[in-house]
Length: 407
Image (tube, rainbow, N blue to C red; front, side):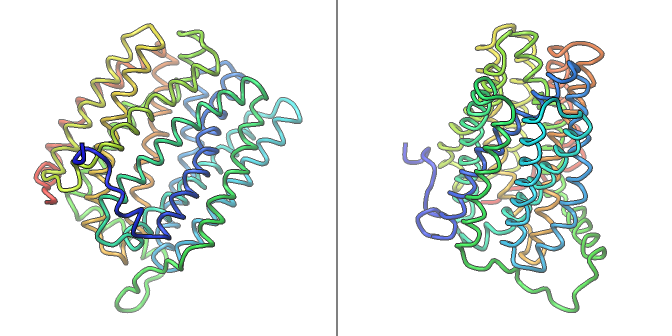
């Protein structure tokens, strides 16, 4: 059991990591509540699964710009400042959404614009947070990454449930207001820890555009790093039917906002359970192979979820998928941080953030588009199968991922 239990050494050893982790948990509850509110509101306003899917495009554009710019800035300044800027942007967008929702029926274009601002804030937060962790925990990196992912998934269990409950009892605007309040916790945490300045690069500092391009070249040159990004992009683009959870709940399972919250939370339940038993990963070898096998399990579980017609069965399969994703995420994050020097971590983290959050948005677009020409269930089924096929292509294209040991 000790080998299975998550290692908390990083949490015990670093006061700053503890404070940051607590702030992230509290802020994450609001973020997850808003993730339920936005697609639910769009579907209620329009009745269109296709428009729900197009939310991904509205969110992806600002994410690309903010992530790449934010990554270059993170390698130049105190990374806490980026974290605070991300929270302020999120508070602004969520606050406006709460206001226009309370005022009546908001224009769908405005909802899309504000959803993009929320996504940009989340992307900047992930870039800053990811680039800070190695310096906070030192040689306890795997322990910290496992705990961080488990804590994030815990918020993804509670947050959607709270969001669904708030929407059902108080209306959509209450979920946005909750997001505003919860962001304050991470601002306080960032202000209470030591400065997180990057290791200064050798030589003259490059112009910002040249710095961004150098970060992209660094990622492209590392085959294992590229493989870890590619396999996650495949899994999220084809195998994450997040955009359809509200549609499935309303049209297939007839379970309302509560059912949508359950589907969101199910992925996180499995991921949290797996993250809390990642002690075996602390000294695991062959991390690349573990990633590949985990993503195959993810794709198989999503495929099976597209075949069932009961809410509870879909929830169980999504939990299995979440558990596989948890193992994959811890291993991928370990690979990424291990092969990246500190002066490059902000830029690598920006690409990592684009893959993690951008892949989900591409998945929203893919799932919504397929559902609009077929059905939500066919979209889930076909996406899972495409994920499994995509893993094989990634293994062929990036052999260093399969070969990566990390022991």
